[in-house]
Image (cartoon, rainbow over the protein chains, first blue to last red):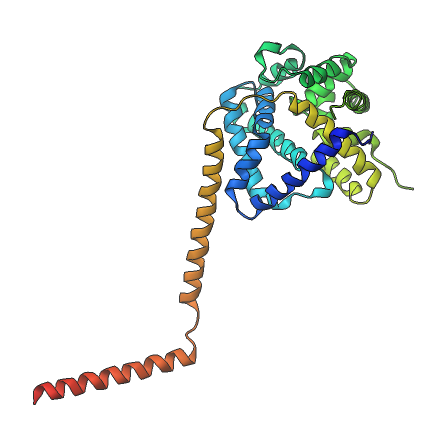
Length: 197
Length: 121
């Protein structure tokens, strides 16, 4: 699935700046954390809102996520992936942790199903980012076979593991794995074809 | 022959593996450039999907994040200063310092006694 595109080269330039900022964060520079937030705060807040279904909760968890970045900046390994992907994983883990602790206590488990549904049902006017790129991503997701789209939604927005998806959907684990792999490969192909990834 | 965890690479990039499965894939990635490249590609796809959901952030969120980090940094600095002071206090006094202090005491006492004597005259 690997390939080099023009957007990859731009990504490399961004990755260099991200790496410099993260090194400063690791050295205890809170201003650098603010700059990292300026670059990625909108994406982090957007996915947390998508996963948790509430702006107030997304705000609380975004604070936790960036604090985790502050504390764990020294553990980042560049050879494993870009800073932004690392940041995305931290944010998603913070959302999953919130659901398993506070969310459960507050009876917000239903948000899992709501969040999964949002992959297809979020109205365009409800979203801040309505540019062409976002629409192309949306179209690429919509074009997937429903069974692949559903497992990706459960993994991405609901934060479920493949094993949990298999139990929840009563589909064999092997089938879930194949759907996740094929779905992601098709998305990759289409997004690269559109110059988006 | 090396077995590549092809079926788990996309799930690894999505964070959709159980912890033990993720550890096993992580160990494999340490020595396999091909699978690492695939994970990076899948991760970039995941990022593109996330990016398409970007939203305007609530006012005050940035300040709250930076203030919390600064608070942490101050707490760490204070703890470090306290540790250094405690370490200094707990350190055994070197012989030279003890001798200097003793000499100082002798000089001061001698001076005081001489001054008292002069005053009595």
